[in-house]
Length: 115
Image (cartoon, rainbow, N blue to C red; front, side, top):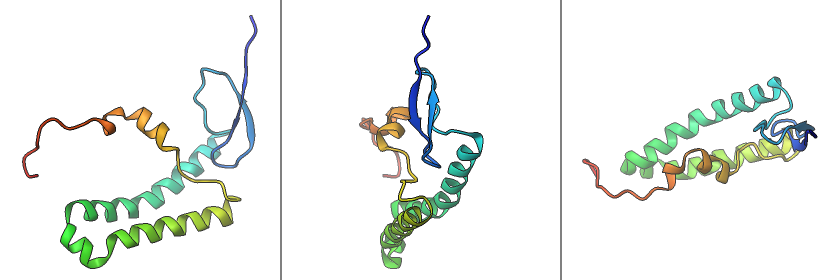
């Protein structure tokens, strides 16, 4: 029986590596996976706070220019990617995120209290 191998590109360092078709590996090593996740944790904490305020404390967020701050952070992150990561993106493709959490695209059929 022949074992087919696929070429993949590490999301962190950009190196090519080989994986089996049934493997969902996105990184060439544990170090790369950890680096990717650490950067996302660090960046995500600020974005989380700002986005939650934008979504649920609209008046205050608007007065503070929170949406502009979110966009500025994203631009700063992209500039950092270009400088430190040879231009490689530091985010997962939206299709992959939605595939893992299909309920995000579901249409709400009931109105929740407080809305």
